[in-house]
Length: 305
Image 1 (cartoon, rainbow, N blue to C red):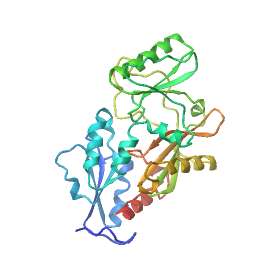
Image 2 (cartoon, rainbow, N blue to C red):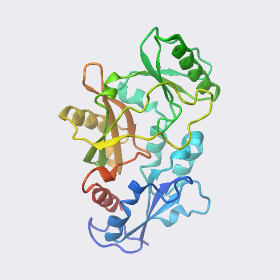
Image 3 (cartoon, helix red, strand yellow):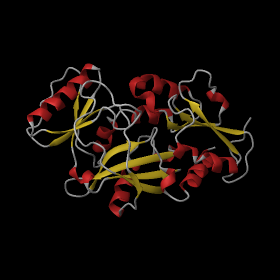
Image 4 (cartoon, one colour):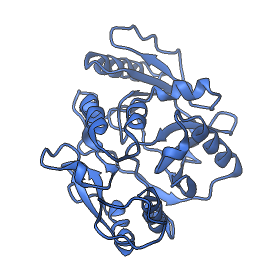
């Protein structure tokens, strides 16, 4: 039996870690592969494993680390059920179930976390579009900004497109989110704060991704698992660090159970940071954007073992 109480930094032998991915990325993304070498230096054998591959013996791994299973969006229930069967999963299966539907924003808002205001439109409900303003329409279960669109409701054509987008998601049985578009994302961008092993590691800036109406207006999805992003390193402000810590403190069960977390913030109308997404399931960690980040992630995994 593998010894799981080895002190941090000690040499291990025969320890296996699965880096969980999807069939479209069987060898992981380049960024995720950066942790393999520092894990090997600690005597830990890390290898990619596709989450829905029936030949994988998950019990044979000392730990399964969710990395890029991005194709779960269309079959979330199956993914959550699979997560519950993996003996040792990071982040834990109950966190996966809670975090893969963005209704977690309601829970965090109730706990006093500043979040982007959100209207929820369920299948069969009537949506009354606001009179004007820019809004984002997207599904409550989604990743990589797929099936998301930005609409300026002052223009009748875009109002019609927004209504059609909501109706299309409803017809597919999906819970819809409608949020005001925060203009600061066009200038300041979105800040993602990365936490590894419970400690702040680094931060990145993401540029605006939604430049207009959903390109899938015909009902066709854009190709790929996600939309391309413009990423650069960023030093977060004290206010952003404070909000991120408040977010983590409100996570059910406690943030100490998490191997990793990414807190995505955007300046609100008054300039103060608000939460747009909390990524606890399969976030990109952008290990290549910060010196030592891959080492820190490897050490967090070693401590978890």
